[in-house]
Amino acid sequence: MKIFFTFLFASLFFFACQKANSVSVDQGVIAGGNYKVTGSVTHYLGPAADSIIRYIDILDTIKDVMATSSNEYICAYGTLGTSGWNYVITVDSNKQTVTALDGDETILTSTTANSFRKLEATYTAASKTFHFKSLYTSTSGNDVIVNEILTKQ
Image (tube, rainbow, N blue to C red; front, side, top):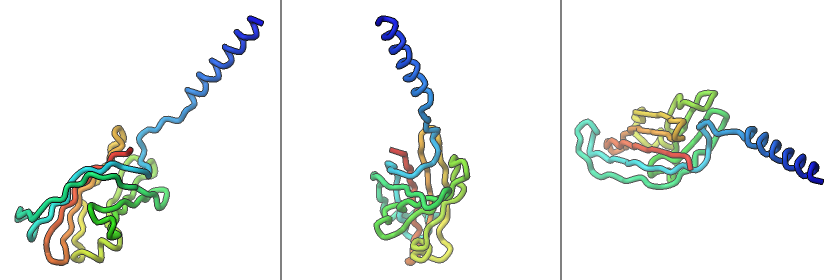
């Protein structure tokens, strides 16, 4: 009986170790899901280069990043996601690098033509964090800079 329990214990221990070693580890690849968002939306009077700030919205919320294909995601833009404004995020095939950051059709048709510009679009795998910074000119001629940090929850 003692040999049986010793064998059973050894088998269970071996199985547990094998199971622990076979668990897939998240290597920080870009994935959809909930992201904690911090940052700001700075509204200027006229061009941002003139440095006349009208007001600043502080971002502190949770946003969904949703896959639309194997290498493309969408996410609400700044404070205007409820108005249908979304980032279009394109990533490399290894899902480690942001290769493009664009505004969706709603952004592009709601701003001054050709004014949406990506200033920064990075992904840090170690912290599972995006950093997006963009600029657009409103139809009234005022620049807006959106600076967002999204951290996977």
